[in-house]
Each structure stands twice: as C-alpha cells, then as structure tokens.
Amino acid sequence: MNQSIKVLIADDHGLMRQGLISMLQEEKGIEIIGTAESGESAVNLANEKSPDVILMDIVMKGMTGIEATRWIKEQNPKIKIILISSEVSKDFITTGIKSGIDGYLPKDADKEMLLTGIQTVMRGERYFSPEVTTLIFQDFYLKEKDGKGLPSKKTTELTKREEEVL
Image 1 (cartoon, rainbow, N blue to C red):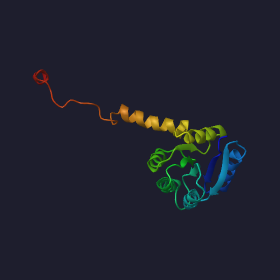
Image 2: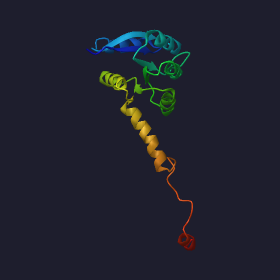
Image 3: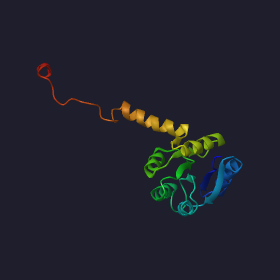
Image 4: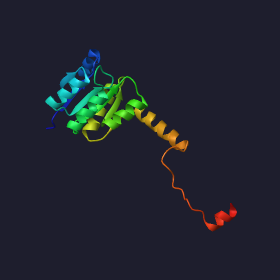
C-alpha cells in the first residue's frame, strides 16, 4: 500500500488555505498535515512536520514564499515545493527557480491541475502550468529570434580565399 503524500499549505489568506484544504482533504493518498500563514511559519512547520509537498504562496507578509522556499530547500532539499500565485510573472518564475521550486501554479488552477502538479513533483519531475510554460517559451523564443540567446558557433579566422574575396 502506498503512503499518503503529506501536504503543507502556506498562504497568508485564510480563504485560500481553506479552499485548498477543501479541494484536497477528501483525496485518497493525500494528507494535509498543517497550514502556515507566513513564510516564517512555513519554514518552522517544514522542519517540525517534514511534509512531502508544500503548496507555497509567493506574496505573504514578512518572509515571502520564495525566501521561505530557499530556507526550506537548504535545510531539506527532498521537500517538494510548488509555488502558487495569483500572478504568473517572469520575475516570480525566475526567482522561484533559483530558490529551488519544483513547480508553479496560478491560483486559478483547477483541482485536476493541482493534483497533477502534486503527483508530478512527487515522481521527481518539475511541474509548471501551461501558462507558465508558455511564458517561459515565449521569452526563450524571443531571445533566440533576436539573436540574444545562446551564442552560435562562429569561426574567428578567415581562410585565405575569404580574405581575398573581402
């Protein structure tokens, strides 16, 4: 028999915490082990309760979710962290990735996307919502198209014939 996935919810809005609990509490294989109202509280509960997955809001009073993620990942890199935000922004995604996130979901994600995200990160993979992957790919595409992406292989020396032609 598979063990339940232990989930910690960190969000400074009570309605959001309660909504996530309502979505997940009846799901087989998922156990809500606690909630945190701040980044500091999330760090403390992560150390105390050892969750498998933390659903972490980004913008919280005091320590942000990104700062809390960095602290948690330094202390226990096995904990999977999915950032949840009302805003899908390149800055949040970039700083989240640098802090060690395992996934990123918008707050308007549905239950199926949330469950898919949790299951995906538990398999050791990364999970980013379609909106996030589109934003990341568009940025990559524009950099490549404008020639600001990875440097292409260039030859620095001209052949004798090329010099003659020039």
